[in-house]
Image 1 (cartoon, rainbow, N blue to C red):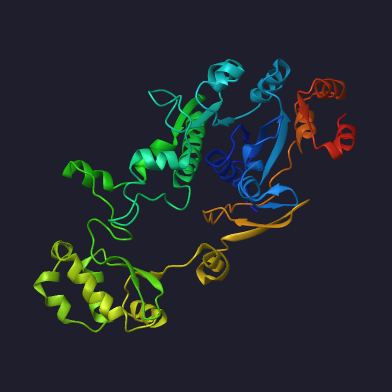
Image 2 (tube, rainbow, N blue to C red):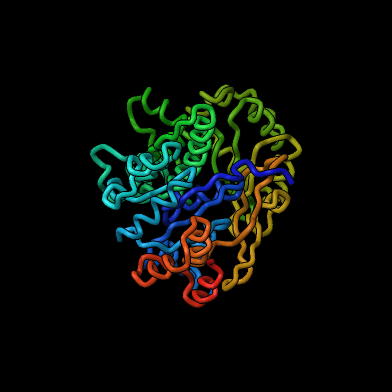
Length: 413
């Protein structure tokens, strides 16, 4: 198998909860050695979040931390700080998502690390950015949805603003972090220079709303809410079939509108002046919807999907997540769900890496680590001797898995 794109690069992962861990997991999938540096007391917050636990392991944590090694370290103690800075000297990338200013107080900020390792790529993920009037505020995914306008545009026209079901700002930030880290590493390969990266959930969310920004800024007003519909395209929303099953119809070009008319055997709609183009259909949105709702109510979902497929009309049934992940044939074909064996949680199913690299496919080498599972292993790689490790353990600076402490210590020469 070909060498993975990030093989040989070490990432120190100081992140917790979702945005950072998902991003560093994707880097690990393509070869990076991701060392997850976790808080001494409790580790990553997501180890103790949510309501679903398997053999004491949080489902949240298991789903977004595969392919990583865990080091349990107290960064608040001078000795812990020293250990981290030694780790940083041999790292290529550091990713952190503390609130702005925390890394400075801990003494592990970019300038401090750069003084020891000028080639470091140091990525900071925050809610609003490292500077500015909101930088100091606590916030998470739904706060960003609310502030950026995403929540205001989601929901029915006569209803309340609605949070998007998935943590979209988190995943936008995760993807942008992966992109920017790879770009910064490429820059370093060409110039020898490391750099700091400032990413925010706010920035990732706002860019994800293209092209709504153009419409909003040109109209000089908010677009409002359209439920499952669209402010510009008609028909473009959820409809119901004969048995009441929902499906989404997406006619965003004239070609698809005419194909839809053929699929439902209504060629007269193609020549109706009220529906002649998208501008007219938008003006007569209620009429279009009324015609289509009456027609769709006569057919089952299977019949409609067959007609749409035959006439090349973009449409899809509205499936719940469980159905999509476990029963959808395309999801299965794409191998979207993988399984890894965890030493305590057993078989853990999770979402696969989202990109199919035809030469260097992602690898799934290990499940999410247990807290401190690799502490001694990583310190050994950094040339810490057994006596120093035992001294730091007694000081409460670092720890491994308690049930395996003796075994791990014995392995350190």
